[in-house]
Image 1 (cartoon, rainbow, N blue to C red):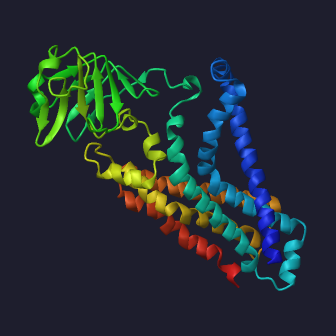
Image 2: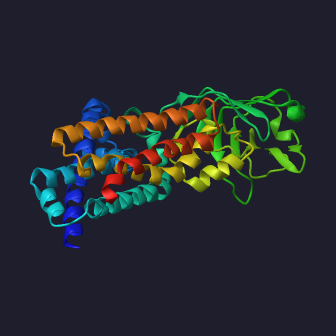
Image 3: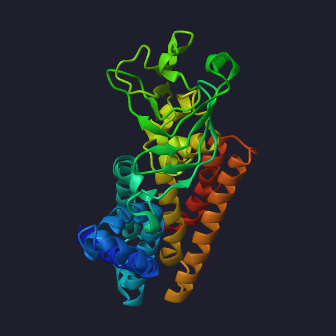
Length: 376
């Protein structure tokens, strides 16, 4: 137990130092690059410190998610190399402590970090993902962004617009191209704005169009119905609507409509599964790939650590700098395999499930073979 506590404390110290160093370098460089934008928002947001805390506070969660596996491996390498440099590793081996016994607390702590990263990915990041859509130039989210046409595959309506405003979940100058089965109003519905509305007691989830100009007599037109579902509500049957307003039912949220990668990258796994089952989205292979990657990520994190630990604890003794260099090369090969496999899936050369699990199939046996000397 004394050995476990000693090695765990050394790895914890190394983990904190590596993570704080990497995060500090990134955030300091990014802050100085965008300092003019932060200063422009400081007066209206309660000061520069408040702006920086709000902007980088949520991004600390993102940075941990992006670097936890690399930092775990680096911390393990630094902790074990520290033992080697001070001849403590030699003393432990001479005392009959096996290499596996020395590596065990390192692997346990790496597993704990992987679980924390999993909790952060599933619970924390989904709560703050809307903040990632706002960069330093658009902290309030009120700057119009380009909007590309997107189809609601559930209703076959093509949503077009001039711009999108993230803070208000609004599309400026929307023009909805209607399919033939919903063409009773004409080929399109034009309005001044379209605002995403969640489901309430009055209406399902969808888009509230205000300032409708086409068709001009929208207030007197009956609702458009497809099957047993009302697609377009008008003031003729919905008293809660204001003049020149209509409501278009849709299961495509604002984040999904503007094509933001944040909703898939930082959504929880249950949300991604619901998105796959949502016929209105017509998701491609990237979302199923991300779901499978969520399940394989903890195993890949441990695989990376298992690839690196034998560089120090193996039977052949290496210098600290040689071990660190081999660690960097191993990490590079690891991520090339992962990104290459996922690229095959996104390019439809293989299924999303195979693209997500292939790195584990390739690297898992390699890690077990590399770690074999530690078992003896």
